[in-house]
Length: 195
Length: 80
Image (cartoon, rainbow over all chains, first blue to last red; front, side):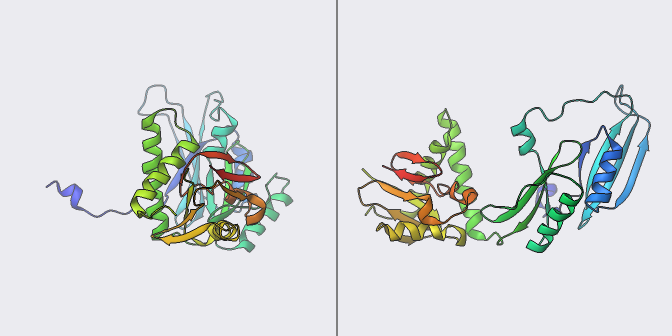
């Protein structure tokens, strides 16, 4: 057997998540001064490796537990629209974890004091979050857990993905179709007689 | 006609299960789920009955359903 496949591996979390900025001054001000994330590293380099790669700066802010949010700035490269639609912008977001409601509200107060638009806390199924934008148009979230995930959540998630994949395979996928597939899968699994 | 709603039996969805029980629907626990069965009539639960926050209410079908989904909006969930 391939020994690579027998080694048990578990990542330790996020090392860094990298974005592009066209405005390093605003990015520094926001992440270091408003959010309070220390600037811990900056690489400056001649473009190398790939044809026509621009010279660049790559800088890192620490966001706790060994994780970082990082930015590239490319010299001489015109701004690109990296966030094509409002829906995709909302989808591709970075959520920062806090533990308590007090911490969540403290971040909200800090953002408001800096003149940044931020939502009221939104309570979802298992998390409560605030949403706001960084100066680059990247949507950020600060979130706290309302409860921990348990084994039921993982089992249910597995069935949800089965239902989603089945609904897509059936053609013309929809929320209603996925929930119907889920009901079929759960009903068969539970085998509870209809009343 | 058969209308059943499966609800993952976790804390945040208990208001949905409680509203169904208050409406007189049969609720049975099986495995990880509460099974709400309307015994041949349409299954109707109103958002206002549950007191659920909006983001949570709109996840009410996550456990799946059997029957025909007739309405699922801010006001009600109805399975015929």
